[in-house]
Length: 469
Ligand code: SF4
Ligand code: SF4
Image (cartoon, rainbow, N blue to C red):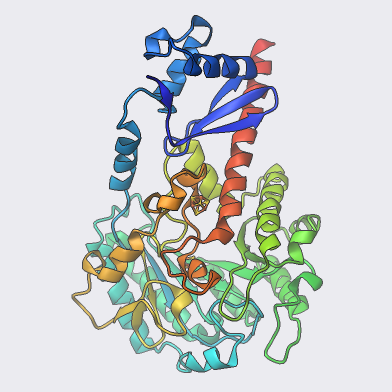
């Protein structure tokens, strides 16, 4: 008998219906009449094998068979899942977060690192990363790249300068960047090196802007929105809003020719207004964005309604920004997976066991969100023998992907999801662990899939009309 796969999902599109396998990821669009014929055939006594499909829907049935949406084999779903699981990447380092300082000049109210909390702040190292530690940190990273087994002609090794606030320790930043650049000639794995920094921007000045440009470091300035009101949670330690000053820095970067991107944490205020982002894009000539959905922590809980609204905001802005040729990172990663029909296993380099985070004191961990208690900090830069492939924590994190979650297997967004952030999942409610589901992220993944399927249908429709002319 022919039946729908357990991974098959139906999307209603008015006059059409889409059938979609969440792991093969190729939508098949059917007219409503064909869909009804298909349902009648599947429910009837003549649905014995694919050859018995009525002529009127034969072509559609073959498409549905090809993408495993319809199946005749009992074990087919199991086989597909097994195959997809066999492709889960094993730990291999390509990304390094250099935590130049755990201190920050701001105290944003939602900071997931905990810089808004006096108690947590006291756990952070007061010492910035020294040049001596930086030297060893570069060597450690280099060794991890060389033993990763990755092909760095294809993959890009990435160094992200991070904090606290990385510009608190500017000399070490310059030291590391110059050292890496000087090694590019002799170390093949660094040939395609990409360096970036996430900063609140307040400690930028003309000399630093020029130097960052010269070093080729991509600068992402973090903001919470596009007006002072939207940035009211971004405050300094005395409680003052700093958005006006950040805008001055952005303007200066533009004047001195340093292209910056904005890393936007979507505050509740920001997602209420969809116009402000476009005003900022036009006023400051911004070409690149990353949107961050707010995370809960043990000191800051995000309201339930927020997730849906933030997910919708990201989609609406994606539609507006692409008209200007600007593509937002988070959506692009999902779009890429959908367009290539390739399962997107993890939404951050930590959950594919692909990153190291080097703390100012040389401790090495998986996730920079764990800086304050150093959980999952598994070794230090003096450990010459460290190999993430055999490290229990790295192996555990590399398996944190929706295809390993029984609760995710019936979700339409399974293939494009990536699973969000395990740390956020842990903080969502008492008793959760990194193995729980980051439900904050589900609205985003599901809405995005729905959008992509409808968007592609519009494109297909348009093309059909053009072809007919
Ligand atoms: S687990 Fe969460 S906090 Fe940690 S690196 Fe991934 S997304 Fe960031
Ligand atoms: S995490 Fe949520 S959206 Fe992602 S696959 Fe699981 S249930 Fe679906």
